[in-house]
Image (cartoon, rainbow, N blue to C red; front, top):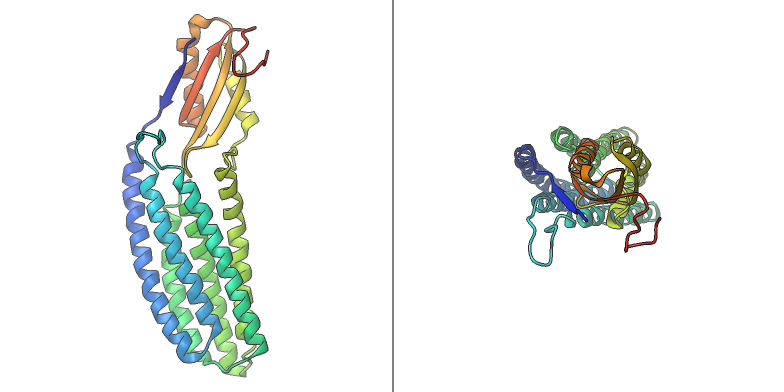
Length: 303
């Protein structure tokens, strides 16, 4: 029985990955510098808003570092005991990032509640100026990642979180202005809770997709039935079964299937045609086993 395996190699992504790596490094340097400034300003002014946002920005730096590591693992080579290299680690890193953000949300909520119970005076002007710097740093980082996110879940997650941070910084600026004009310091913990809500909303989709990929579910946005229909429409294919679709990494998807074809001698033509269809639909790694009608696989009594 013929059994073919296909690996689709890309040279273009290597250049894109080098560019994304530079963006990650620049983003890490920018955000680390800002976190140091924000912590200093938060301690000096006694602002839970600044300190909580600094904590979240620190988690963003950790996420960026992990995303940078994941980028290096995406195209790791096969080795003994690891036939797909360490590509799956990119999925685990994405899941880790989501968990880190959930922990950050919990910390921010606790700090904000404590500020409601034990309010302290804060310097509204310091909050506004520091958060204003955050708009520049987070906004620039989000802009850089926006053009690089492509179809990588880690890059997309980093972009969405930096975009959320930019919007949060805008909110902190507003709270600083309100405190300066009215002295209403309760706005500070309120903004802390808003920060938590924004992060939670942004994290939910990342967490959901990461869990799907970690249990080898069909990647979000890919319709298994649509793939089956496309395979069945290929000339020479009568039916398809034993089909499995799963992620190799956050950017690559694999498929295995048994093809029922009318004439086994046509397998050399039918299989490449099916593979080409799969590549066009985001599945670059496929293993297809041809068989004739009435054949019963040893893997499962399917016919």
